[in-house]
Length: 148
Image (cartoon, rainbow, N blue to C red; front, top):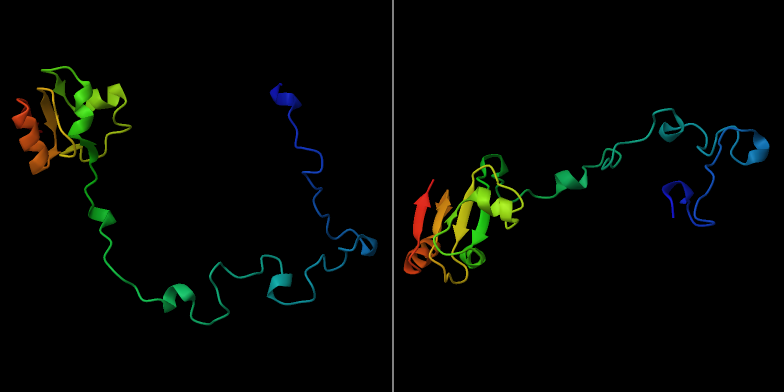
């Protein structure tokens, strides 16, 4: 199979409707737009969500909650159970995790280590933030915690 031999399956495509091509075509004169009115004009029609002057649904519904997306601190997160793949006495940071494929990308505020699971290796972990449980579990395993 070559890229230039690929084509849609038989009957899968339709020829476009050719409007304004005479009375015999079925779409002549007004070209399927009817007579007059906003939708018959060029550039006519209404924006999505417009309800003809009635108060739109999006404005009728009550607004709830608080959105802090503008000031949200986004961290790349990792659980300590994911650190068991490394050898003892390894210095672990976000760049190493990215290189090994454990992280897909480093978020703007850096790395945060969560305390889910158990750690069996003695590691030095460098991160921007640690949860209390992650910090205690790393230190119990004989490792060190370095806050960047």
